[in-house]
Length: 633
Image 1 (tube, rainbow, N blue to C red):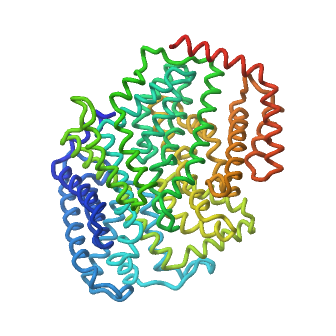
Image 2 (cartoon, rainbow, N blue to C red; image 1 turned 90 degrees about the vertical axis):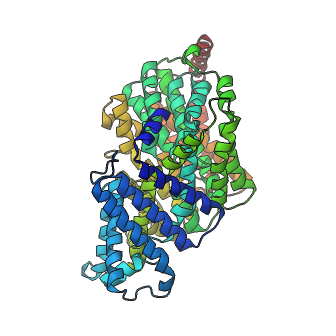
Image 3 (cartoon, rainbow, N blue to C red; image 1 turned 60 degrees about the vertical axis):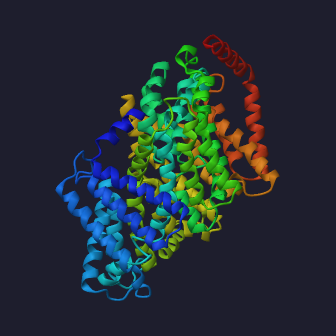
């Protein structure tokens, strides 16, 4: 995987490499020295658009050579960026006024460039959403009454979206320039220094010898690598090349191996301390600090991976699997000796976020800067070189391009929805459709999040839904952070949900497995994540909000609920289960998940009784697993 990254870097034209490195250095500079918001956003977006047009062709593929139209479009974007940078401060207070004809022409071209940049990096769906939003703003009065609004002129739309902080250079571009880029750069530098390879080897050393080891390696490696990549699909492509063949070789069926990698990779975007890009938008919208969101997402992410581990272990029991032979595994002691210092940048990031109380931007800066410094603690020949450092800077910028394209165009969508008042109208419509019933509204929100998330990256889906749907949830009494995380979680797992499951399809291609079977198996393995968002909406203690007693109670009941659901879904608890036993496990697990003292007591009683009935079988399976582990070691 590391070799692939380096080879792709070597093929990039020199001009692209220089601009990408310059962009990363500029972002590092802004991590310490604060610029005026508009100056930072304009430079950030202009850098990204120039790189996109130089790097991507009309067919949405990266090119080894820059086409003539790439130079033309990049040059046009650069000149318009310079104009905005030089003139935006003169336009304060002129929002909505008729701009001169040349500004109107430039604004129109710039918006078209943003749409085309998003199409080249993301495909057609999100650009179409942006175009529909602008058409809606222009011709809203011809729509049915519940969606109608007074029309806005073409000049008003362009002027609002161009040289103001309401459109392309709005809040979302500011989040990209201030927070997201530096975290992407952090991951890119860590990979360039060899961190990706270290975390995969660490996963092998920790779990390779246990029952179903290769699958558990995939879970740990993907959760760690997902923090660095920030993309479920990239995570599958990166770690799946290693873990999926191992799982197949150890006895897992191809579709199951691919599903394990898919679900593990999706979870990497939900795991603190980095989580996904949408988290920074939540932080900005709600006005809460990053630590609050990180703590709130921690327990839910742990439950997700506990459920996945249980599913994998049960599957290994059903197949009578043993761990991998010791001679095929890296030594834990040697692995830590060679790469222990890769933990330091993560600890630096957490230290500045949690204890020093500095800004998220400053924490991300020091985390990124610490990587090349800490790599000097490695042995001779493994230290990060100047060349690797610049390759990390380059890959950080190139990896961030789709995110910048999303958020720049997302600013247009956000601006149009705000201008027309569509968000308030949709909130009222959704509440009316659900009959004021929270569970019905949550179900509609889940369906909308998954459908939209199938076609666009999670952050793009979240942007739209946070404006259209989240206000309706909050009106029905949902805690605001829980409402935002609910949408974010379902937008994230859309990548594993049929019929369009890009993460699952990539994994299926690596495993040479049926695509739809892989996707449905992934949904079964990810059963917990389809339930956890409902849990924290109804019981905020799952977000670590409440008294210590409430939090302790929800931790205990959630664990047994997840255990019961895993056994019921896998149809195994020390042996095959009959239909009545499975139904009781589902019912008991459901009681433990639904908040309330009486349901917790009933659910816990049912699950504990069912577990006790199976104690002899469980002891037998545990003994067999222990013997197999001793044989492998």
